Image (tube, helix red, strand yellow):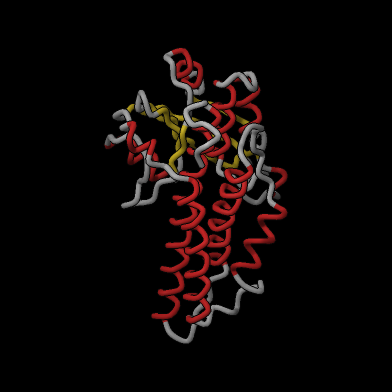
Length: 258
């Protein structure tokens, strides 16, 4: 199974298809290759291309922090609930996934069926200047700062009970061994930042899963708050890096930028 959200994979592979690097049906199959059932409004992907869209972007929104996303009450609510979506900035249309594991609840993971169903929503077009403001170098710099500050904060809170040598070591291990499933045509910097951003989110999830009560409820609450912040920062960076990569695949940005 890929380390990346399905919306990240779909945005990159479908943009690659729009650029003629792969057939659109193949792009959809590759992006959802770890899922057994794919349904919903996937015909929108062809419609968007027919209407002249060249790039599919991704959002990984959190409550109160939607990031770059078509504005509209329905699309915002659906995307925040799902935690992810893909969209085309020119039209403001979005596809929001619902992921599920089908089968008996007591069945082994390998005996259950993974599924995704895409629901379509319409929002307002995203202003061009907001898309153009995405900066991969800035995203990479911010990721480094986030990891340093989070590590220091958690160590100060005596969060050494994790089954690792620390956040940085875990991040580097996941970066080296991750299954990213990215299309050809991405720059080395884009691949690196996407992988590192996804790793930060995974590290935060692991920390939340392993969160133990400290000597006080206050310390435990502060650990959780810091890990949730790390999760938000990782998702924000992953969405931004993915969108910059999509812009390059679409030919909207030349090799002299990012």
